[in-house]
Length: 218
Length: 205
Image (cartoon, rainbow over all chains, first blue to last red; front, side, top):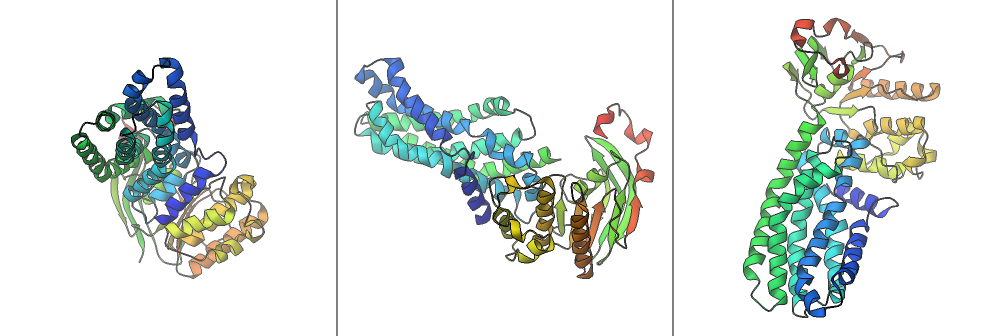
């Protein structure tokens, strides 16, 4: 299992691996929003938590169609399915690798990018915490979407349509926790809901992904 | 431990392709599958490897015993020969990749990226993967595609050594490997018209 994780991380950082794709997209979104909205620091600080969460979500979505498609094209998925590694574990590991290469860099970059959007000082901790709790859910749900559409040529659009509704609860509670944190309210309830969603999907989604993938491998 | 197939019916795209297939494979035995293109050799191998369920019939002794080699080798272009092989060895719980490299003369290429290998060299690396699985039943789908004469000989030696060690092999191929193996022609087992009721799309076969 660690072999698969090591391989995926190694592949992500080598040329053409797509590491930094999500991060670059996130950077572009947060840099451009102030230009689009205008230089009203009050308005910016009000929308900052939502924009940052939305940017993180879209950045995750951007790299999802590579998650399984590359392994499908070169036959790795067939061979993994016949290996001693349970498919559920393999997909869980692939989701973890996706989070480490996409979600985690976003979490680490967000304090810097918050400055661009004039995020209130008290909001930084809560924003980082909500992203840290929420982005793993984005990766495992995304793996499920990738498993559903793995055999489809140019399945990126179909996958986005399937995955976006599943992302909505994570976005609502994540952005709400960050917003409450930024405005000095108590963010505990949305944070708990967010943690619950993440814990739930981490437990269930690898099985759903493996079931979907088995059907697609036939 | 033997592989026993009884009255197997396999399907592709929901349509039966082969039916009434029965054979046994004992340790040290190899079976060569023959048949024209589209006769269902790949579908049979995929079913036996557990990638798709059979329509009917029984497969005994295949669970967790099979090393499967498909048309594509599952290689990562951006990983070196060593990294590719070590990865598969780790997945199958093995650690020694040297015999596999030696068997297919891959030692000189060990630090080359798989993406820079020629088609035949990639195939050799794909076949070397079989040796690091440690599984007793090899299922090979057209293993000699793009191999030169020397590499085919290396492959035949590897299979023979595997059989001598009590392994089994099921090989779908069109060329003569020079193995002392039974040949199974799948043509007589093609699913008949009435079991393919509603079959209008030949492309699925």
